[in-house]
Image 1 (cartoon, helix red, strand yellow):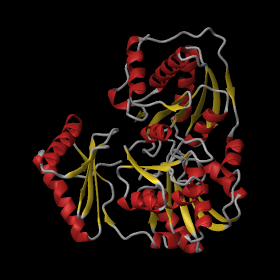
Image 2 (cartoon, helix red, strand yellow; image 1 turned 90 degrees about the horizontal axis):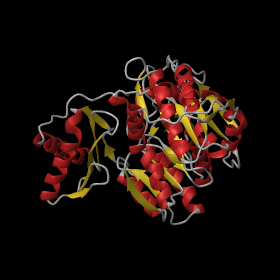
Image 3 (cartoon, rainbow, N blue to C red; image 1 turned 60 degrees about the vertical axis):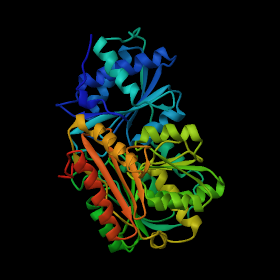
Image 4 (tube, rainbow, N blue to C red; image 1 turned 45 degrees about the horizontal axis):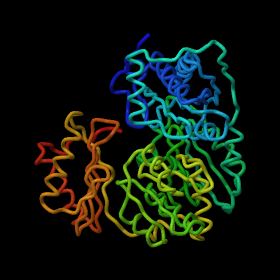
Length: 462
């Protein structure tokens, strides 16, 4: 028994593909066999399995469980729910690992797997190992006594989200985007003080209303309308599997991931003065300055939820976040990215700081920046191009940070060029104090790309 994965499906942070084309039940079975084998060799035996609301998730769940039990692991099914609910199960139940079947914020025909192994992120080399084991058929055999049980943890998870809440009463709009977080959000708002209005909380893997990615402003149109019509204090939006948070203020302006982090940092640093707070390389300089101003220690790190979680454990950081809306709390929580929990902490932060979200947005330094620009390049060129750019910049004596790609500081501001770990795209971003400065930064990006024979062409889809 051997199995070959489509090479495009084994990603840096997870396994992901198009169902029926690059991902199917045989892949799920092989993932189960490999994961169970690694777990048993590490002395573990029980795995929690959850799934999102996609049409293909029950089929992949059945095949995954077949694979896990065939290689000797017991399975605890946590059912349909957001990815952080599975992370919560892995952190609190008597299990040795967890797997969530989810296509995250990808279109409905995608699906994939996010994994936790003995309370740590399972990514990078771990995922490549699964591929190698499958190709060699290097799998343990079960003894036929494996059990599959169900654990209904949704109410426990909701109780944990709200435990110790001290956030005051607000008027809030919640947009679940027909993603897996809908039922949890419905239960959560019933327990919160204030006035709450929900959108699209029924789970529908076809995503009939809008694509569930709150980092793209076009997906926030319904939430903006709701906030305006009902005169709400602010609005919250969730991605397809509930591990990324989006927000808008009372005027319908987007509060971006790095701006959310600058708000969330304040109460965290009151409790834990001088603590390290981590953000990814795409975050605004204004965030790093704000963390320092609040007495914290800002750390810039590589983009990617698995990489950030690993860095948090290493540094003991109580809080971390990414531009993409992944927000990780280790202060009073488990250190994983959880949009539902981040939403609760945001409501509390607004209350503790004593200003409205609109006022907090008003007070942020005025910066002119680009959205995250993604453009297609040949897979074989994406990393070499970044190396060429770095070599030229350093030869020119530029001020470069190599944490993840090239982040260049200039008197105008900064620009970033990095290779995506999950797609054949380069990612660029720039930020300046004014439009003229931004134009100069963009000219530098185009100049560097041009020297490597690339034109910043068509934007790639997420």
